[in-house]
Amino acid sequence: MKEKVYLDSTVPSYYFDEREALRTFTDITRKWWSEMSGYYELHISDAVLQELNNGNYPRKDEIIRLVSAIPLLPLAPDLEQVVEFYISNYVMPRSLVGDALHLAYASYFDIQYLLTWNCNHLANANKRKHIRVVNARLGLSTPEIVTPLELFKEENNL
Image (cartoon, rainbow, N blue to C red; front, side, top):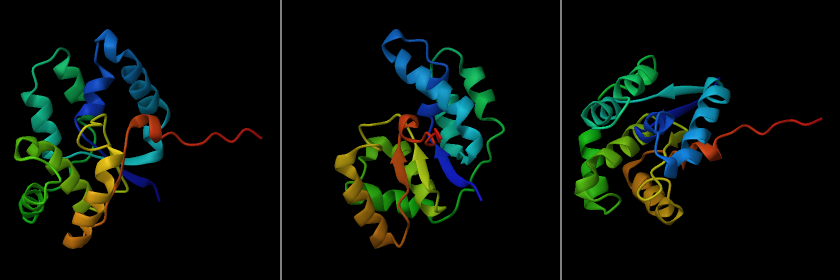
């Protein structure tokens, strides 16, 4: 059985990013997508689609097409309460409700990995313990929150 990966909107966005300053991240994203994505069961949520649709950036249509075949997790009624608990317990500020939603989806649906390039509010070692503690209070699992760089399979060089 494949491990599950929840993609937040930064991953497909970086796949098509053309900014020179982000070229390394774009290259890593494309390499992960072409070489590793097939090893995992990928998931997104309506929150990802909303962020991608509401964004103002080049190649938006291509980004949306890239994720169009990825299954959407259903909107569970409890998710709003999870997001509110994250905000009230300072996991995420209210202004970053999208980040809280991504974490809530991945946690609620027991996804092994939340894949993101958001290293300020999600893939941040200083937040991991706090996220685990809050999720434990909620009775939820905590996904490994990683960047594509951290989710490559080890090559067997025998």
